Length: 272
Image (cartoon, rainbow, N blue to C red; front, side):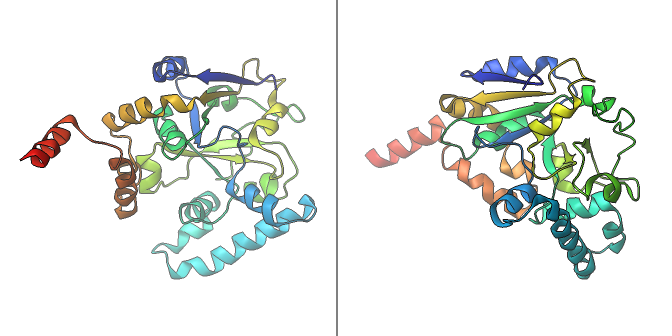
């Protein structure tokens, strides 16, 4: 696709240098470079809903309705559920499949998610949000980002829930939770569920004269160097998930880290 540029990365410093001219972009890391940019809802429906995708809006709407009807039991501010994007973000945060794709303003946070648990080729996607800010799909120049903003009451139902138009919106809820803040996070919302984001973006080809996606494919050989660099930046599970779950997750990488001083102390005890 003309609006996607693929860069194969074999040295960590090449990635660091490559992102220097991508100020203001959004990034998403994938542990497997072969994975398309599907939301968790799209993956779920593709895997387990073996019917016509035209029926998927019924499934999504029912799931959204069930959550909103019952979640008030567990949330302190029930008004959160009346705000579509905040409600979807809450669902996403707690593991429900939604059409939201998690992105971050930090390429290093995205690199962490790509590399943390991979043993093969992983990838970081860079989304050209500055170009998308004023872009519109080729089939309707009026449908710019502000026009389809799902934070506006009724827009989610009008432009997204019916799963009909190749649209892309990106942004943040009016109020962000602690994980979104810690991860410099934002959401990308696709207009259709049966196509990956990279294919949906082809609908913007005529209005944008530059690549909308850059895909950095990481060689497995860079993981050790990259994870050490990210650790020194304090980009860890503990910092990105500032709770007990994040702290517990950070222990996985601690198993890999052995400082020279610790090795010396261990060997000294062995020979004592």
